Amino acid sequence: MAAIRSRRHEAGFYETTVFVHELAREAMDKAIATGQFKSRREAMEAVIHAAFMPEGSAISPR
Image (tube, rainbow, N blue to C red; front, top):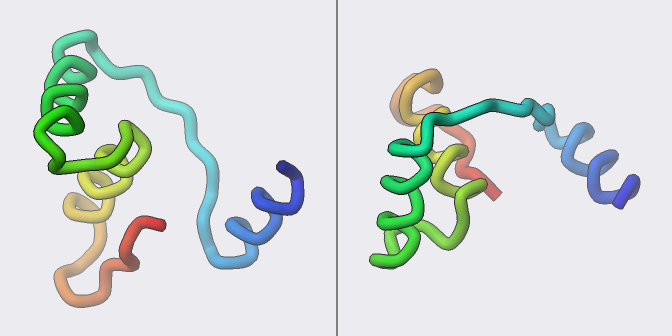
């Protein structure tokens, strides 16, 4: 696990813990169930990138 974290860090990724309201979690779960995302992690990464990365330069989530 440490090696994975190290590789991700070297690639410019940083780990952040967030708390989400249960309604947001339910919405993420629905998006996962419909195939929009594979996991909560993927859903959160996509939203964070869309909100904060300029269009065209966003790094795709893993």
